[in-house]
Length: 405
Image (cartoon, rainbow, N blue to C red; front, top):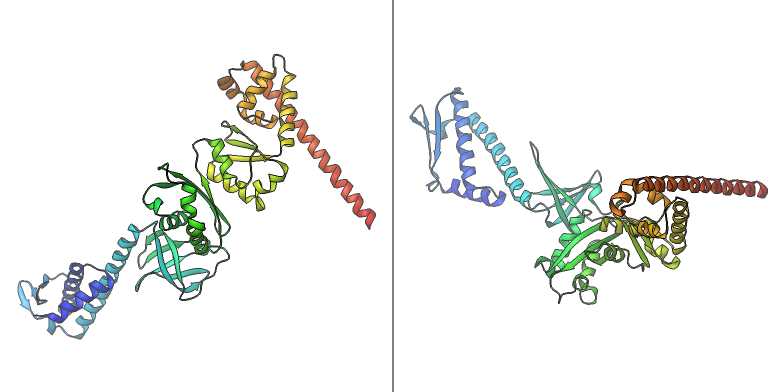
């Protein structure tokens, strides 16, 4: 019995996660290549068999048995090169098959090095992952030897390697972290309905519970914030807002803009726009630093969100009412219908156009055309006035600068 060969096959199969049968086939093919090299007969009929239970090797050339051990040094070198190539190909196939199934999962690895800005992470003894700079959280750096968790974003097989692309910025990384930290999510009691993220800065997560006894927000936060703290620590201090999901768009938009308090919301389905009214002292909170809060809320809800103060909102309504009331046959009832449609300014009416007024509000087409025309005219006037005011301010600033000189 050729126990040594069997042990070698067993060790290679275990260490490189390759099927033993594939290794035996590779060995047989490598020996066939070596024999053809020895006899200098590329097309000759050579068959090599390895007994899977004993490891004994038998070889035949044109149905005549040959001793594979007597082929010499050069054929042996050929066999060695062939087997190395084939085992490497099998190893690539094995790695690809394993990791392509794990695509979208979180995996832990050890930082090996930085390579042209990309982070190379050792995932196991033989496999390295590649995290491009764009998939790394801005401001975070990792030391060599540090354990790091990341998302398997993609797996690509090339001619000479398997490229496993990792990410810590993808929104699914947050989803998977919540699944690990909040058992109710993995048990399907709570579901993440929507998620919007600016990696390294802030994330908004909308959650819903399928059990009335389970509070989705409280479950995600955890006792004394323990669960959310673990996620925030993993992300290096990134802020996370847990938002209660609601099928009502008005309620959802209001929840998404928290911690700001919303006074009123007007939804225009025709434009996909939500006009949100907040008090003056809530304005900066609703918009957020560099517009981050409203931007994430818009992405979370799918609505284009405009934030106005009560003064701005009322001014828009007044300009709209004054412009369209000049049209014959238009009264307060039509103004109210337009506001109910989510049209709260002349620019909104201009953008909505004639068709929705006829189809949704049953307004006569001639009157609808006149309404849109009146709104367009008023919008042009407001724009011209705004430009003039800006020009006057700029001129006044230039004059002030000259006087100071």
